Image (cartoon, rainbow, N blue to C red; front, side, top):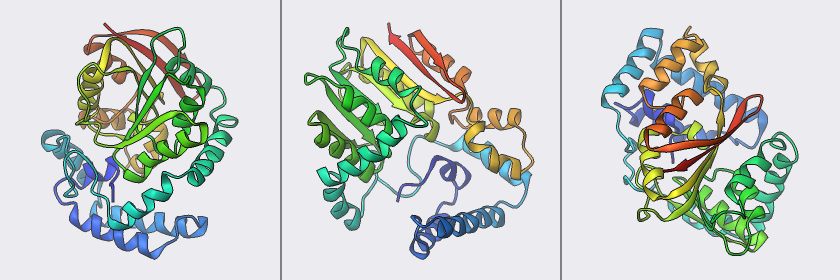
Length: 304
């Protein structure tokens, strides 16, 4: 099981009860069923409220993580990779298959032609720029493969794509999508805090909403900088503000947007573009393009 960045922060000092509750909950409900998913979410919300009953306790947990939190897993996993179960290992053969690839591509194409229709062409064009040496590409997180699909379908045959995801099954989505397009695409299960690559290896490092779902953003950017060649490109898609994604839980504790963004910056979560832009520039990058959309943006930097 891979916990999300939110749970890691709120339960940093005592994760075991949440992990046990989550295992029991996942066995209880079929998350593909919308009705059962709502029940699952309601029980999760109730667990939060029972274990973090007040605004003061909620803020205290952020403050504790700000002081004590580190780029390491709190669920007992190996520091470099998620430990996958026997069930996940067996599933991975299917998730890397052409059959699953067809499912991934169908979902991703629906997104590409729907909600992501405006920004994905900018993202894939920046990543797969045929006028530059964009031959080695590393994407930070694969997830369901919406960004991966946009890149791989746009690649020329001399380009290579590596998708890194801490979730073993998600990493295999990259393999499956590569099979559909018959392109050089490989998923690697690894931590973005400890990338298993030598320095100055990639021409492009990119992310499609991946940073929005990670913690310890400064460490991730350090690693991205390390593996990117001088002159290489960093291409990112993120929301203008993390408030768009996380406002509901803050509002339950009576915390407004300004205070929420401040708390997220303190614990080294992605907060907003201004925070990210400053962190990237601190690492010697120059911003070369920025395309805003209604709720998110595509930004391009070059490593100097």
